[in-house]
Amino acid sequence: MTTSQPLRSSDRFAAASRMPARTDRGTRADASVTTDRGVQVAVTVLAAVSVGGAFVSVAGGLADSLLDAMGPTGRLSIPIPMMLGQLVAAWVASGPRRRPALVASALLALVAPVCVVSGFFDGGYSDPARTGAHTAYQGLLVGMLAVVGVLAARQFSRLRTRKG
Image (cartoon, rainbow, N blue to C red; front, top):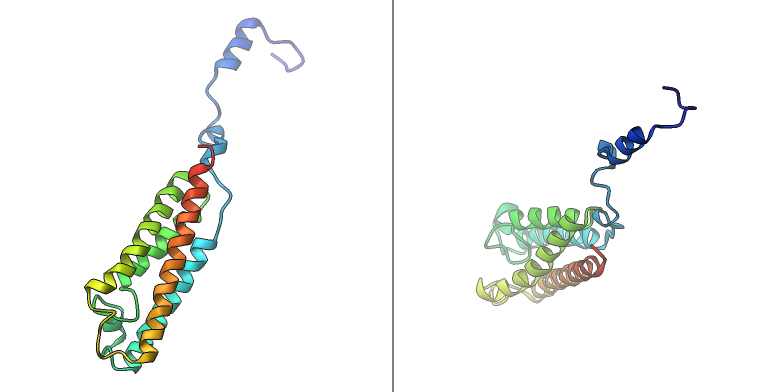
C-alpha cells in the first residue's frame, strides 16, 4: 500500500489504537518542571562554608585534623556524609523531574532545621574552647543552613502547588 491511497477503515482503527512509540512514553507535561538552581547554589555555598569552617577549626585549635573537624565532633562544619547527602539532595531537588525534586526538596527542608537544632544537643554551641571569631563563623554556618532550609521549603511549595 502506498501513502497516496486512503486507509481502509480497519487500518485506520488499527493505527489509532496502537501504543505510542517508545519516545512518547513518560513525556507527560507534569513529569518535568522548569529547573530552579537556587537550592543547589545554596547547598554548594553551604559546603564551601563547611569546608572553610574545618580549616578555621584546625587553625584555631578546635580540631586536630580536617577529618576531625568535618566529623561528628566538628564545631564549625557539617560532617562529611551529611554534606554529601545534602549536595545530592540539592542536585535532585534542582532537577527537571517533579516527583524526585519534591521528595528531595522536602528532605532538605526538614534536614536543615534538624542540623541547626543538633548544635544544642551535641555541645557545638556551648563549647568553651570557641573564641568570638569561632562563634561568628558558627553563626555564618547556621545562617547558611537556614537559607538552605528556606529555599528548599520554597522549592517544595512551588513544586507542590504546580499541577501534577
